[in-house]
Image 1 (cartoon, one colour):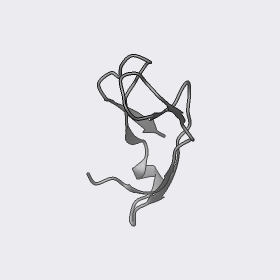
Image 2 (image 1 turned 30 degrees about the vertical axis):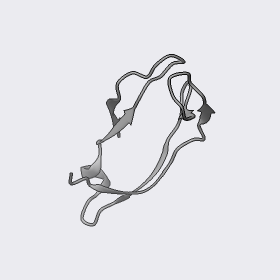
Image 3 (image 1 turned 180 degrees about the horizontal axis):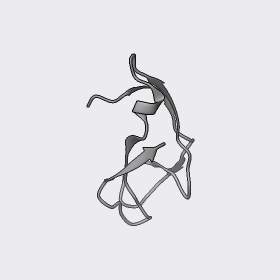
Image 4 (image 1 turned 90 degrees about the horizontal axis):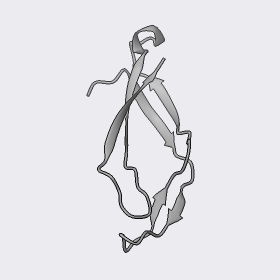
Length: 79
């Protein structure tokens, strides 16, 4: 969709590679609280006053050692 910003980069923290019984492949997981850093650039003609608050959608999938839940999406608001 037509976002007021351009995403220049997204830096995810290093995850932990884990082997689960339900998967033949190792899966990279995050535990606890993580920080995802993003560099954003306002598009031409957009000011900070009109760009924010900005809603971002974060898609994730919760897993434990037995199974993974269905993927979920959460809206995160940047002010």
